[in-house]
Length: 124
Length: 136
Image 1 (spheres, each protein chain N blue to C red):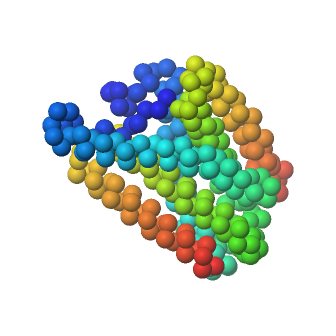
Image 2: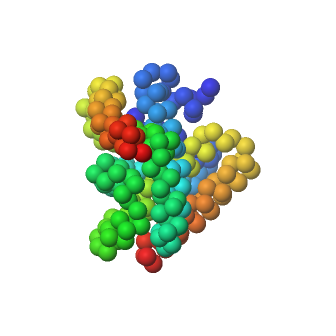
Image 3: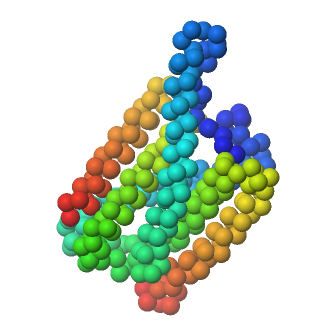
């Protein structure tokens, strides 16, 4: 492997880099799908038929994944901005990564519960 | 760390007469692209997380049917919000994918085709999304 694909040489920053790429990639492809499904709103009945699929349990799990990807990409993105603009953040980048992961789970787990609740409580 | 993952401008020797200008313009595009990612990223943290909260947390996903969209888009400010999210997220994602392609698609022709496909798809979906929001 070259420095191009492994610019952080295996340290925790390497995993932050991989996580940022993978989460960004996934969110981008969801965005492409989402533009198409929302465009059906010109035909309300068709939109509602397609939209109902998002309520089933498989798609709810997918939404939980989207939430986690979105949260990690947002919080790690804030870490990248901090590291780029504030010298103090460079020295603490590892701590900032830990904070990003803790906050992703701290907001993601309750969010996942709210998204899955209709299924867990048998209302689905 | 601010590693610019895309290709550096073509490596001509610094002493060559045309190198200075070629290099400077190449660098300035990637510098703007780097800066845009930070700026749009900050806006998107707000836009995307508010959007996700409203459509998955505050309201359950099954409640966001066509009536929900119609009620929301009665307010032009929500259309502006959604269109800003659409435009910034697409451009941010497009630039990210461009970096990814530069990193992993190494064969020049394949890289050009992959990028052309990505730009065409994103352009078409930007038009579709804009049309959806404006013409609803």
